[in-house]
Image (cartoon, rainbow, N blue to C red; front, side, top):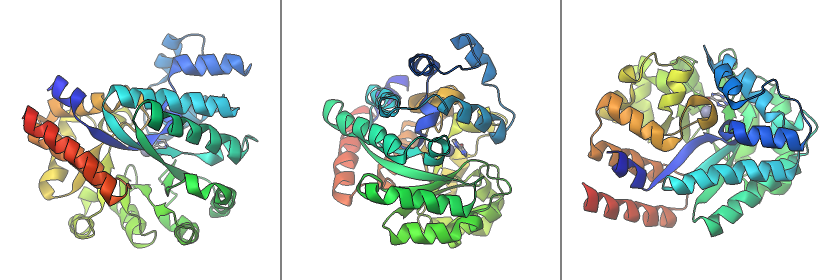
Length: 335
Ligand code: HPA
Ligand code: ZN
């Protein structure tokens, strides 16, 4: 199973680039920028990465992102993640970034987007990993603030495929961002959002009905509402599930109780992703391996998960077909 997963061609659809920031690189960039971080060693960092809930994690995640200043920092962060993609047979990835985390500290939008997108361009050529970008609005901030970000993004529209919604879910429902999502769609961005991670099924309803999202990030709590599950299936919306994130943030108490297989059996289209791999104890392949073991998934289940990852990506249909064909050949030779 380990080798089967390692060699399985796959896409990652739920990844926050700021959450891929490994301690070693964080130290290096902090030093380069002469910024103090409250840790003296990798061990100290790892000790601090114990979370009780989403907010606990977010506080530490925003602090870590605070050492990113120059275009080169964003480039190095992104290229380092893309190298891990290449090592894991992640053939395509859809990368979320949080512009407000940086622009609120006085970093120009341009610095962030140029660093990230140059790394993506280089990785396509040098590593053969394709990628596209999802600009995520921080839901703990106001809709007005999100509008500012939307406007800042417009000169770089050709580099951004979609908009997302992340950060503290509880108390910040999708309805708060109805207008900015409408405006984002008018600009040509595909609407996506985190929903039903800590928030109730009602938030998922809002995300699909009011924001018109094409994919749900997490979506675990959709299972609380049978009618919602039916509606998600009817609209053919996928859920980007993140097993190790769910246990790290206590959305799920134990991987053995993770609802992923139940979701698949209900007919929901789910994918496996790492979310914030530097903080949650594993890259995407580790997520596949751990959930395979915990739920005793078959090779056919893993094939289905990888198939969904290409099928529900935001790639053009003709490119999807190329990846899907590569996956099918792999599965037929390795079942
Ligand atoms: N949920 C919400 N916001 C986030 C996450 C997450 O899992 N990771 C990074 N920002
Ligand atoms: Zn996420």
